[in-house]
Image 1: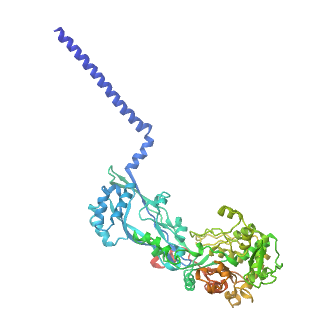
Image 2: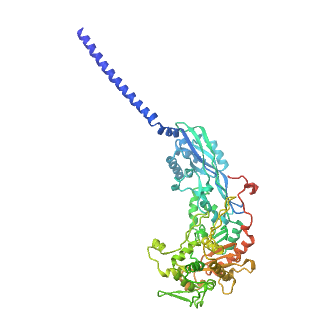
Length: 625
């Protein structure tokens, strides 16, 4: 019996020890759980609460409708049309590849495109992925009929860009295209499926106001990502409408006048306000054909092929063509020399047809020379030797400074994208760009607008308008909002007698015997043209043979800059004909014809469209999609 009692006591001690160990284990376990819960809910609650909320709340962005584009008189140039598309929400689809394969039985999708869709869905499960666009109503009905077998797929109303007068204003308006992958991190809106952004022209230059602001819809979802209910919806704010300064009818007429030229550009602008009323470039292109509005994948490939076409029709030569300005640059050199005090208005400089500088001969276009020339005659007859000498005296730094004051070599923020800066060279530019010191002979060449000097037609139009007005006129392609009064451009700060002397010389270029621009002459007394011819050398062969003997690509570029009426300037016009030969023969008649129509139509003298929808044609009032 004693042994049994002893065994019982041992068993009770063992049980008690096990119970204590088990109890201690329980206390430790629940203590750890409690401390973890305390940390999660109390100490780290502020950090984890938003994360938990994000798992419960799903926010989807709503794309805004893109703003419309009008010409100065309310003609619609870019609008939106209603279309349909299908998108896939990866979190609701389950097996994405299986769902996409099922969908392709209704709307064919190539196998490689199906794989790309699956990869995009894997990268961002909550962002809808575009399956296809431009669906017909019959396709939409069929997709909705099989909706139970297509989890995660939904159809949406979409808007597609529609262009009018496409070939007439294609270079100015531009077109929209798909968002590049590297740009998607700039704005969450850019990640929306099928979103289009401006690629060229005003579509690109005015992208932000045209795009508008995104809206969003907030859903409550369950653990599997299924929508339980809508919590909030804020509609997108559509982009603002843009009214251009371009007169479409005038633009069409200018392009018609340019059709006989292979490559050319014309810019016409108001001298006082800077409003660009025409900006034409040939060859033309159709933004509808070049844009990615065509069904993918054909659209993007087509857009990439267009620039490779003959003569590069997608190049807007008015803002991206960089040309040596030739003799149209001589007014800038003359004003720089006058301001530097190295020449007077009446000083005569001899021209014997050649100019010697450090054992190098620079020839005048007139081989026998012009004889003694003052500034007036030098501009009128375009004497090269006169400008060789005053350029040497003035120096390239002063010439470059004056050129920039007249709008050359700078970008003009006027609402259109992809302008070229051109080149106004100086020693610092050459050292930075080429790693070489500036040479005196390069100043000589710059004196007649050759060498490294390169400008765009738009910049030359700005230069011409500033000479005519004496003010720092800036080009404008987008009209200001109603009620906004543009500031008066500041003065250029040049002596009036200098500008008057240059203007009188420009008048004589066109209207006096011996002037190089007689082909721009208008016989009407009230509409006299003042201007300057320019011929920029492309090949050395042009100095050895006549233009008619050269191949087209070796001929000189032809330029003419002018304004009218000469007595009270209203419009400045610039024409450039690539490989057109003589500026007086090829470009001057173009400017004359454009000025005649400008003065007859007087687009800036007529009431312009102020953006009021009530003034639109009835079928366009209230339309945004």
